[in-house]
Length: 123
Image 1 (cartoon, rainbow, N blue to C red):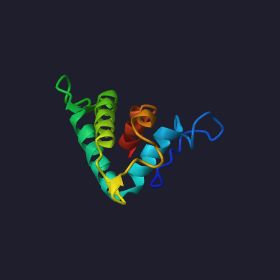
Image 2 (image 1 turned 30 degrees about the vertical axis):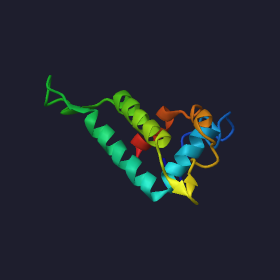
Image 3 (image 1 turned 90 degrees about the vertical axis):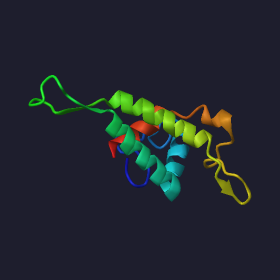
């Protein structure tokens, strides 16, 4: 993921929104990437997920001392991001802040949390 929050490995002419699976996913990731508090929180969670899914290879320490389990890290980080966003009690102008123009839980159901997690783990 680039600093602008755009994925670089997707084609612009597919059925996605700015290279993401849909608008809701792109929008949530944009807010997570552009708001400093969110960015720091998710960056820290991505580092922790990556570390927790990296295991010492006890079978042959000379061959590959550590193995990264990407699927485990992605699933764990996706759950954490989803919980964080859906439980976010951010305030803007005295009212609860929604991520971009997403309007509540119905729009958040469309978010592909695994796609967001995978992008953060690539950094």
